[in-house]
Image (cartoon, rainbow, N blue to C red):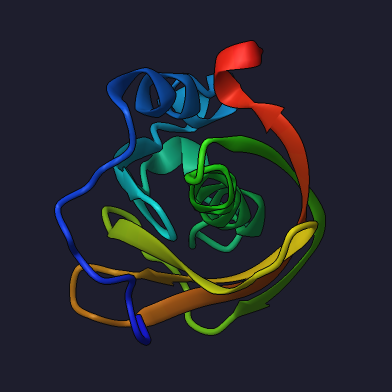
Length: 146
């Protein structure tokens, strides 16, 4: 992952982390949100038989879902609601059965109304499986108000 956010030890508030981690689709796919701090998020999933496509590799939809879970977490990590506007994904290598894919997302740019993030998913051997460049619209609604 290029230029991760500085690790100042300041993870997001536990209540926000719990809200971000309570994603029903992520739960269905076995995606676990591991860390969220302002401008950074990490999640992982294991490529089990239910996540394979017809050629026996990780289904692109499952891989994209992992990237999107991280995108949602990192883009909402500042405590206000952000909604996706665009996600561009590149599939670079196949996820193999049994692989543990870890996706990390970092903030590249944030303004008052939009922000851009890079998310990368790697297998346990370091293979870069997929990347995404994603943009959000930032609302002024605080997570506490939802």
